[in-house]
Structures are given as C-alpha cells and as structure tokens.
Length: 512
Image 1: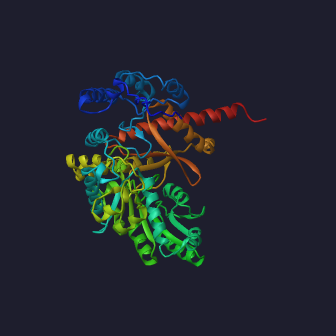
Image 2: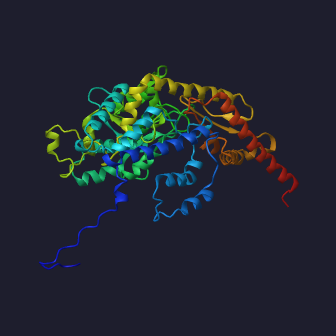
Image 3: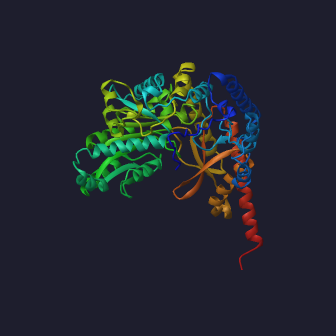
C-alpha cells in the first residue's frame, strides 16, 4: 500500500470516459434514451408483426455456441449494433406467448398498459424498500394491495406486499405460519424441539414450491404431507381433517394447511369454504395459493368459484398469470397485518425503528426482499386504462375456450382426457390402438418433442398416476377452437408416426 509524505499529493481519481458518462440517463441524454428505446421497440414490433409460430424449435446445442461467441469484454459501442446482435442471440428464437398456438405453461400475453408501466418503471428505477427511494410508488403499491384484499374479502385488518412470484409468496406465507406456530415456544430450546414436529398439509396436486419452502424454512424432510384428491383433483377435506387428528395423536403440530385455487396441471380449485371451516375449528393457519386462479377475482361470471377464500389467513396471487401482466407482478396478502412483523428487520442505515413512530411507510418492513422493482405500476396503469371488468372478461374467455377444448378432446377417439378443469387447462394424451397401446408413454413424449422442434406449437407435459400426459394451458383469448384442433392433429400425426415406425420395426426385426 503506498504511503505519502506531507509534500506528496495523492493521485487524482480516474475519470470515466465521456462516452461512458453519456450512457447515463439524465437531462443531457434524454434524446439518446428516446432513440435507443424507440429502436428497441421497433425491433420488437417487427418481430411480433412477423410471428407465424410460437417458436423456432431451436435447441440448446444450436444456440449456445452463438451466445458463447459473444466477447463481453469487447463492447460494440453502439445500441444499434447491440440490437443487431440481440436478434441473433435472443429475438430470432424467442418463445412468443402471444401466439395462439402457444399452449404450454402459465404464461400469458400481456396488455399494452402494463408494457407502458414497464417502460416507465425501469427508467425511473424506483426501489420499493423505503419511502425515501420511492415516495408515490409506495402509496400506489399499498393502494393496490388494499384493492386486492378487498376483492378477496379479507377484511379491514388485511395487508400485504408485492413479490417476485408465487413461489416467493408461498415461502413468505409459510414463514409467517411457522412463526405463528412457534409463538408460544419460548426460548431457543423450546423452538428447537418444536421445529421438527411442524407439518404442512397440501394437496397431492399442489405446487412444488410448498415442498421447497419447507426445506428453506428448516422444517424436517417429511414436513409436507400430500393429502389425497378426489376425482376432480381437488383436495379431500375429510382427509385433511383426519390428517390433523392423526398428526396431533402422533405429537406433531400442523402449522398450516395449503389450499389451491387453480392447480398448475388440472386448474382445480380446492373446496375452500370447507377447508376454512376445518382450519378454524382446529386453530390451523389456512394459506390459499391462488397464483393461477386469482383472475377469478375480477371475473364477471365465475367469482363464486373462490367462495371461502375470504376466510384464509394468507393468499398468494400472481397478476402475471391471469391479469395479463408482464413478469413479475405478484403479491402476498394476509388477513391480519400484524403477522407481517415476522418479516421485519430494522437497519439503522435503511429503516430504523424510529421511522415506525414517525408513521413513515417503508415496504421493506413487510418484504423478504430489500431492493425491489416497482412492479405494481404495471397493474396500476392496467386498471386505470382498462378497468377490472375488462380483465375479468379476458380471463373468462380463456376459461370458456378451455371448456371447448376439453369437449373437443373428449370427443376425439385418438385421445383420452383427464378431469375437466375449473380454469383453463386440459390434460390429455394420445392413445394408440392395438399392439401399439403399450407405446403410449413414449409416443406422447415423442410427439411433444417433435412438435416443439417444429416450432408450430408448444404444449406442456406432465405425469398423471405415473403415466405421461400432455397439457394445454390456455391463457390467450386469441386462441380459437380451430387452433386447438390443428394442434391435436399435429400431435396425433407425430405420435401415430412414432407408433407406426416402432411397431413396423419390431415386426420386421423380431427379437432373436
């Protein structure tokens, strides 16, 4: 480390080149900002205008070398050149959720007011942890939390916070449930003795984030108990009641029951009112994972499917699934705002305790995150431009379309279909006839991969009772019954060809 004599002047700090400073958004660079953003928007517009299929079918092995060849230590020095390169490494092979034959996962097309919000929030770059970093953004997020809580019916003491997605919301909900269950365990020894005995009951068709959350929360490996479902893939309330009794008899503590309003595979909605009654009688925290089904909160025709959700202790919602918002836009809501204290930590440099006394609203007091995007702005502008009824009508459209798709598949002798969804999924599989029937699993796996490789459509896959099935997830109001029928024909062609080739090969080349 250098030392300096009294007469020596330390070297002046290095000054960033003018070209680097010019890239900072400020009064002097607003026209450069406007041009760069306009150029980027133009590229997207050209791509969206020319999209004729949801993907190109490119493989990781094909695209990885293209990305790997980019030398990140040698800048191009020009936004236009960077966008040209981006065409090759991203835009050309992007998966387009707005295409009507993207039928795979819970990815929705997005509404324009939300994209406007995205552009504004990224430029201003508010951080939603403290008031002195966000001001009005804090109040907008709080207002949207209140609006959502009112839609759910959680009551006057409700509160919540925006999150990165359903998995984070479920994690925080179970953290709050764990802390409430441990409230009477005074002292480290009592808490250490209680933690291995905590249990979470959830549907066998529930989301995997419940298991992941239990692991992150330090619960025992067998803490999550998968409760059986009925023929409609909904959790059995009687089985929940029996499991609570069994756990207590075994000296275990059920810290939470997780009900699901829209399972990922089947779109099934658990009997929420019955679960609420059971949990209330047993003194158990009820969390409802409505990441998928939250669109029903604005549905003009199907809001009743969520009856009972108003009695939950906590609720997960994903606006980026069924409110047609860009990722990420999600929230956790709680019935009693006091429980959010379990996520509160005060730092002298950020949110000292005295700010609470001064009634300064700091969202970090409620959140697992510190620095956090102003994702609420997207939903705010959507509601101000379109209104909730319009969003609900769009969600109703996709649920109606899924009902039509289920009818189409169920009447097609080439396929077998699982239970009819309460939301917008269809789980089905191609079913070969004759000697090829035993190839059903392999044929469906092949058909999905072949379809993806063609880029003509994208469907999901899952396992049901140990067998391979395919899945449509409809979240695009532009998808028609004709689109669904066309994709079914493509699947049947791929699967049928696979079965034909395999059975022909076995007949012409018998074993031995």
